[in-house]
Amino acid sequence: MTNPRHCSPLIALALLVALLLCACSSARVLTTSFDPASACTTDGRMAGAYPELEALLPTAYDGKTPTSVDSGRTCTVAALGTLTAAGVTGMRFAGATWSLGASSGLTVAVFDGAGLDAAKMLDFYAVPARTASHTDTFRTLDTTVAGKAAKRLEVLNKDETTNTIVVWPDGADGRVRVLLASDLGDAKVAAALELFAAP
Image: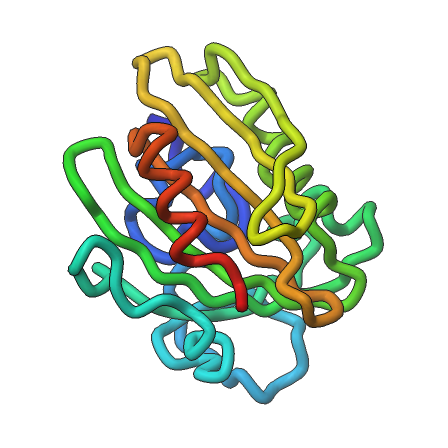
């Protein structure tokens, strides 16, 4: 498995990130104490960093509370990846992760940053997924979530595990919601999207 340090911003919210895709997001942002009120010059994440973002996350899935919930920020060029070229200079995030089995898991996340949108967020995940050594097949699709235009990335890995990432606008300017699923199957992904779609 690819070292999660080679991935990029949020899903790394827990060790599921490593499971989920290593074209992930935020695995570069390791759990680190930092001052959330300070200027965004360093990456970091920890539980309770941005409670207002964490409050937007679901509190249960399939009757279970999340395995982990935390939040943080991505400020450096290395961690922002493709977002830098897209004009995003920093973003905050929060995520709730459920570990559901040996290779299955779910993360629901909220990203917030000036200039951020669903298409840019999809590229953030898609570019490293396309070139990852563990990727077998890869495709992106247009879809909808709660009536909003959304983007979907599907990855089949060489070990036959699957990853699905769906990104859609939250409704607030610069805010994007993301669902990342590992080995859940289409029916459960659809059910989770219906459950977690932004109000």
